[in-house]
Image (tube, rainbow, N blue to C red; front, side, top):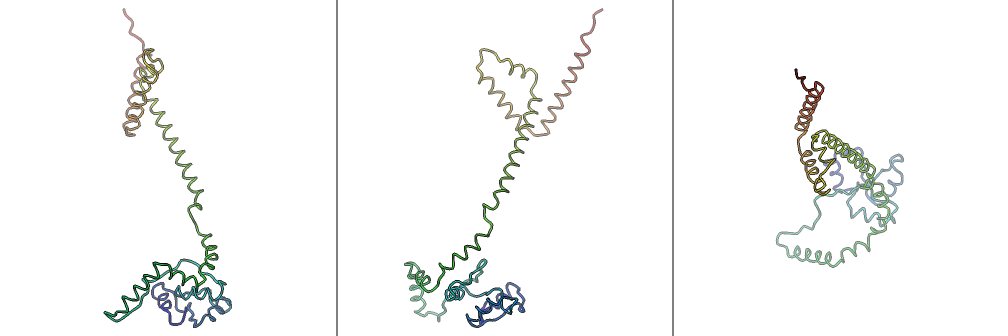
Length: 229
């Protein structure tokens, strides 16, 4: 952490970093030496500083080092003037004009090698997870949903086949010649849609009633007609 920077108190009070893990550095030369030595050699593992100072440091070191991780910032920075000072309006207007016509970005690019260091930062971004990283998970979920829907429709169709009365089955198998093929299919499809809209309890009750009726009919047919005296 730079000597005199607000980052020292910010890391301790806001991020709960132990003070024993922080080391105060006073110049960019100390930055370079500490980073090259590393934590095992008496240096540091990383530098936490304000973004303008970090960009200036990267520019002076020809992008030997790079920014890693996401930037965390406070609410912002600004210039402080006395109340009703005419300089506040003039300075705000000048900064706004520089920002709108692009001169502010040109000054930034001239003195800071941000573009040259962005290629190194992109190497870190390339290792981050993206939507393409989960294509296998999406494929598995899609296959599972397809199989579940297929099993559901097969189950509904089998239940519908059991639900169709025998008279309707004969009508579907032997349609009247006067009716067209599409005419007798339409009611059957509508019946299927109505059947799908029914609740599971209603379907089970209908199948149960049909099963009981079929058993009664089978029992009556097995007994045969009564013999006359």
